[in-house]
Amino acid sequence: MIDITIDGEVVQVVSGSTLLDACRLIGKDQPTLCYLETLSPVNVCRVCVVELEGSRTLVPSCSRMAESGMVVQTDSERVRHSRKVVLEFLASSVDLSLAGSEVRDWLDQYEARPDRFGPRAAPTGDRDRRHAGHHHRTTGSVAETVQQSIKIDNPLYVRDYSRCILCYKCVEACGEDAQNTFAIAVAGRGFDARISTEFDVALPESACVYCGNCIGVCPTGALMFRSEHELRQAEMWEEERQTVTRTICSYCGVGCNLDLHVQDNRIEKVTSPQDHDVTSGHLCIKGRFGYEYVQELGDLATTPIDEVLARARQH
Image (tube, rainbow, N blue to C red; front, side, top):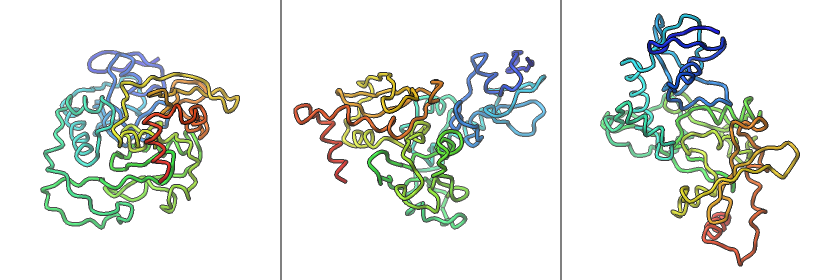
């Protein structure tokens, strides 16, 4: 055990703990966007930074290991200013409307004003074709955004990268932290950085195995079940009316737990609990998407939801 001081309070933590672990131990959780307990920390969102005595820069609490004698401030003026600016940059360029309610709470808590950069600029063409460093000259009167068309190229999930904050969670889940498929990575540099397949091929032509683990870790709705997307488009997605039932996947003997999200007696999507020892939130294509056989009940049981999804499958 080692002793560190957080906001004037001495905390005992196990050696090998992070500063975020220590903060959570005393009920002082820090905002995080790129961090997830089941993934390797990549330190890219920078909203969890704290002030460490003796350090020239603010440090990411999600990955900085606690050391004996550390003195940490989590709510200093320097920390608050840094978090405010980061949130402003993100909210001015990315559509955060489907991010968790905690993100909106952080915007209020740190008095972030993304509108101070001006109104959002009009889309500038296909971001996938842009070359790093080849920027058009701006007037400074509008805020550049990552807005682009939604990618709908398969029947299972959609990619709306106008909502992407480049948290790397999908990359880590597709890589060595879960699936080991390595179908996606970050391409480009600077503001032109984006999630891309190898050689920028279409998703159906890539190494993607459609496990959906990238959807399971996305914090902003940039990756979404096709069923959820189509129902949202039809204004029929009513999360407050949905029930969530936990069960065990019937496809094999591994014992993966499934959370079935049900609306109008129809399974709309399947997730998995991150705290489950078998899955840690991850599934294969069968567990995450192979539920249609449950509700093939014939025309007599057809609902408006079925009609919306049937039309979507025709395209």
